[in-house]
Amino acid sequence: MKLLYAFTAAVTVVSGFPVIDNLPPDVHLRAAELATRTLKNLEAQAVHPHQPVKRQSLPLPSDALGLSRAETNCGPSIPCPYFNEEEQKISVEGEYAYASPAPDQIRGPCPGLNAAANHGYLPRSGVATIEETVSGLNKLYNMGLELGAALAAYAVIIDGDLLGGTWSIGGPQQTDALGSILGNGQGLSYSHNSYEGDGSIGRNDAYTNNGDAHSLNIEKFEAVYAVGGNDTSEDGFDQRYTIDKFRSRYQEVQEHSIATNPYYFTGAFSTVVVVPAAYNFVINFMSNHSEAEPSGYLDGYNFKKFFGVTGSPGSFVWNKGQERVPENWYKRPTISPYGLADVALDVGIGYLAYPNTLRFGGNTGSVNSFTGVAVSDLTGGVLDAKNLFEGDNFACFAFVLLQQGIPDFLKGPLADINNATSFLKPFLSPILDKLECPELGDFDQSLFNDFPGYKYSPTGPATNY
Ligand code: HEM
Ligand SMILES: *[C@@H]1O[C@H](CO)[C@@H](O)[C@H](O)[C@H]1NC(C)=O
Ligand SMILES: *[C@@H]1O[C@H](CO)[C@@H](O)[C@H](O)[C@H]1NC(C)=O
Ligand SMILES: *[C@@H]1O[C@H](CO)[C@@H](O)[C@H](O)[C@H]1NC(C)=O
Image (tube, rainbow, N blue to C red):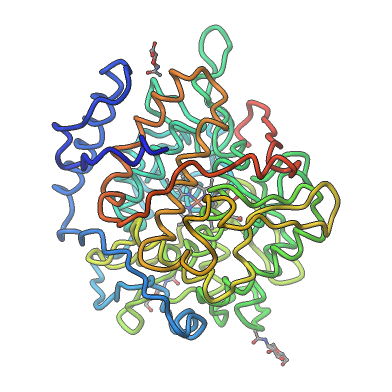
């Protein structure tokens, strides 16, 4: 772990990328080259210079709940100050016209990615390279370049194909001529505890649904839909969703998971960061922006379109694979991308505003048996519940959690694991280099051995779902 934090090369100075271990130099070079090329290309394309990664310092808000309630649909610290119709209008025509996935095209647990692939912002196959991911998600959602790169690079090493540099937004990638799955290849749909986690906004916990955590549970959708108001009409124009309403909903979902899933587990990057971040993504990426509301608003109409849902409360239907970008929809303003630092901030604010949602631990094999693991035990006393949110500590913690999970999930030979972790480094360094982190040694993950959900790792059929 210390090794992971020892590197100092930023993506912009990859020529000085340090060679760690005795790894074959090509892995470092390939990753460094890819990261530089990706960010350079995309910076060149950007209409406006994108903002530098903001400092993480999150002065412990004295009124985190007030802060959460005051937050707009545009993120924790970036105002969306203006509206530019031409720049923000998203094309759903021509090469970006909607098409349902063909039988051999992959879709998965993430509505944001499914909609992007259905409109050709991501490859319609559902298998993408890092560059395709970064440019497609920037174009469609104005996702920060460094955020797209980090999410995609993590997907490549966790459940994609490291050699080919691709990853799947759903199930396993095609098999090779000999019939074996490429790379780690299970795809996002079967990345339980590494990418996909319990307590999702619309999907079931994997264990309670025979390993299927990628299909939308329509009752769960109906419940989250209801937090936006009482509009029961088919259009849903009167519903309004805010990040605070979703944070509060996340607490209800966790409580429901504890009461229904004997394998409920939260101790991994997926559950501590990805799951709450996904709630926040609905607000920050799916909101419609307008002259009157440059920071955006999300109504039931847009929420349903992006989630592939039709009908009205009581008769909602999930149309599998039919996630859409609405017509006449306007993304975040170009000068206000939502980046990696914003993800960490928004997840952190959520935990401060709803402290019960910050759980490490799980059920121990029966429902309602949740047992927590203290942050101080996990981090050998370096962090505790008190200082976790001081300075950059929470972001530091999240990134160690991310990196430390990797060997567990890859289960491959050590050389491959080292290749994978060094592949990821240049993609994380743009943010890690800006953080002031305490010396965080190895987390004591053996503390999680008592939780059956920690080891639960369903694999999937090689279908597109
Ligand atoms: C490379 C980029 C992305 C990756 C790798 C990714 C990955 C994932 C994964 C692994 C999940 C499952 C998490 C869980 O268990 O709850 C997920 C869920 C989700 N993602 Fe993404 N995502 C990406 C981009 C986006 C974008 C751009 C949006 C919004 C436009 C988005 C919105 C969501 C939502 C709303 C969910 C929760 C779905 C549900 O529970 O019904 N994601 N994503
Ligand atoms: C829905 O209506 C009920 C009764 O009129 C009210 O108590 C409740 O607060 C409303 N819910 C929302 C989210 O507006
Ligand atoms: C987005 O907002 C604009 C401006 O108010 C409106 O004309 C358009 O119909 C909205 N689009 C969607 C998909 O709601
Ligand atoms: C990982 O490293 C080993 C040697 O240590 C090498 O043989 C192998 O091809 C590498 N794998 C990838 C995916 O680069």
